[in-house]
Length: 377
Ligand SMILES: *Cc1c(COP(=O)(O)O)cnc(C)c1O
Image 1 (cartoon, rainbow, N blue to C red):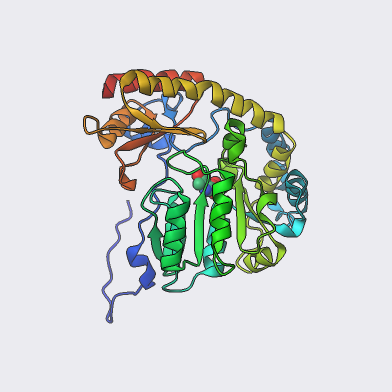
Image 2: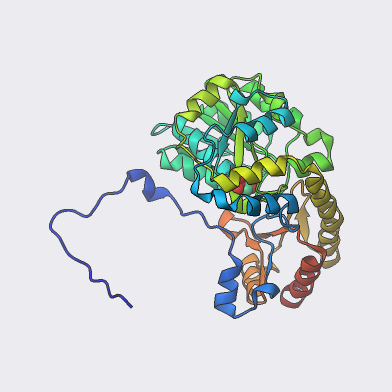
């Protein structure tokens, strides 16, 4: 093994951007490889229910298209993303210049923070929500304001907005990691209460699941595009089963998209990711089947919670959040499951004695229930 020695030089220690002092590195769901390495469990016995991936995998048509185009790996992608934008513009009934493509919608979130925020600006979000909003905002030196509840309550958002005049408001519906959602009516009430100077981000990463469950939660880019200060975000990572390909998008009025484009590096998704996104748009049946499987399986998680006497948050996503009282400890339970090869998401770092479980295949879910009973009840 190469041994490194530290070389001491004169002068002050290297200085990083001040903004970094207050940033916690994003903690991603644990990969299967880690469980294989640390606990010696065979990869086929690991059940990963931690990152809200589609348990059905991706559309077989997408997998085939990626394989058929593998020889194009040497080519840069079509940087206009013409075909993908056309597919999205017809799906959502918007124009090409209303769309920006990102390496996951995560990258669009980064473009937004960089395009809007300056030091000491503030941003507003719910008490418990997607961790990347905070990280990207803090990178720009912005202050984080949170509402008192994890649910997106209209009154709380308006009160905090009036008090802090944030530059960005993040509305995550359905919300990750809690699974609850905000109605279209409430989202519009918040949008209508804020001035043009504040950008409202509506993150619909799990929107396909919410729509399948209850029409009152359906929000489409078209509902929002008339507002100059609103952007809708969507992704292929969840219902479309393409988390590994990193394709997401933002949809907004053309002048806003034009500004965000200034933050975009060229070729920001790969040639094969582009193929995957285009092909995924052609296979809506796969998404319908995925949601049907999900709908069938999530009721088992609800029944399991009831049978064992703990609470859960009604879910509009592809995961469910179990809430524990003091008799159960989310860290203890997550660690015990991990040793048995079942990966779930502990929400202790979000200040909750709770766990988030991605709904898996029937077999994966059986395994989860079996191991959970063994370690936790
Ligand atoms: C998964 C997720 C995203 C983005 O995921 P990408 O893989 O970067 O597209 C965005 N917002 C929320 C709330 C998510 O859960």
